[in-house]
Amino acid sequence: MLKRDVTARVFSLCPLAMVALALAIPACSLGKPDIATVPAHPTFERDVKPLLADHCLLCHGYPATRGAPTSFRLDVYDPPVGTPTPAAHQEASRFIRSIDDGKMPPSALWGDGVGPNGKALLQNWQTDGYPD
Amino acid sequence: MAASCIIGQLNYNDLYGGGTGRGSYQMPHRLLVYSTAGLFTATGIYALLAPQPYKKPLKFDTGLVHRMAAIGATAGMVAEVVLGFLTARTADSGNSSGIKSMAKVHDAIGWTTFGFMTVAGTAWLF
Image (tube, rainbow over all chains, first blue to last red; front, top):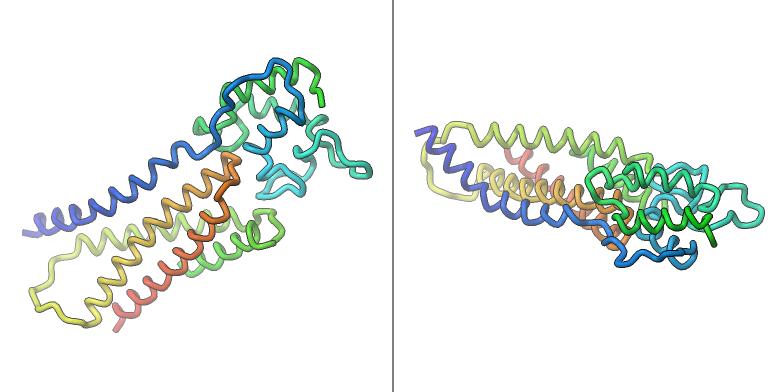
């Protein structure tokens, strides 16, 4: 008798569990989609900055937010005159390595990073010497 | 739950309400909501496994109020877990679109759930 009651109660929770599951499924793809094409000779303003805006600037803008380090910023190529904080140009090799290693953005750990084309774009930018 | 709501509100104010944006309340909020969700689940399982009481006619009493409020709190808690996870995951991917709205809805449902839990707890006591 007791076992049947428990089973009935547990089954009564099924609709709730299904709603939760339906809501949870989109969680698998919350990031921005990968870029469609990889420019052979990307520049910061035209190609890299939009990629950073999609995946990095929520935290690594200026001022840094959400616990991101304040020691650098990625929203500009060079630091504005009179500001000492290193910008994207100076930090390029370091942040590209973090992205390649899957450490950034944080959700890259679950396969939701900048995408293969995004990585290829950054590698091309690095090969060309980080043009503005 | 009260601590989760208060720290969650401070977290919302910090990140979206013109605060410092440093994220100082993120980890405390995370730890508190894990604890709250764990305790709520344990209490729910305990209630589900309780023996069936004797049959009595359905009427508006503290028992019915407790059940209704507990169902509301459960729905709110499930929504909070899902929405909280979605908001954190979206932020972790760097995607800023819609994140403030998601956080606002999460905040509102959190306080509503706290209201349901208060009613359920009060009805259970009396």
